[in-house]
Length: 145
Image (cartoon, rainbow, N blue to C red; front, side):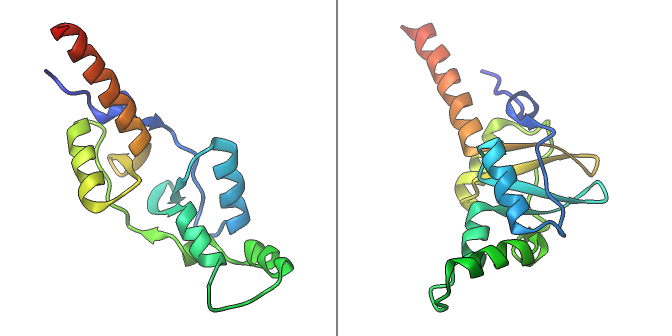
């Protein structure tokens, strides 16, 4: 059985943010797209990735007690560059879904940016891989059933 390539299952041209965007922008884009991570792009180049967990960690220190209005201030003042993961691991669009699944499993990633010739072209998430494997296993089950 030939496994699909990442280009077959990735979300193409994903919504991204810049390192200078605020956490409020990040949260708004995540809500609009119903996603948990966004690539960080500067000058057309992928420079990082920011997740909902990164945002939560930046906003919710268990060691600092503060009022709700201070959270609003943080959303406007903290920028992506301060909490993103820089230089994320990437894969090319011609990598197999098995390559991505192994990497996500071993490194405990939620998603991997897909880069071609230095340009962000997509993103593959755990959800994309589960949908792909569900479809493949369903087809395999039909072939043997």
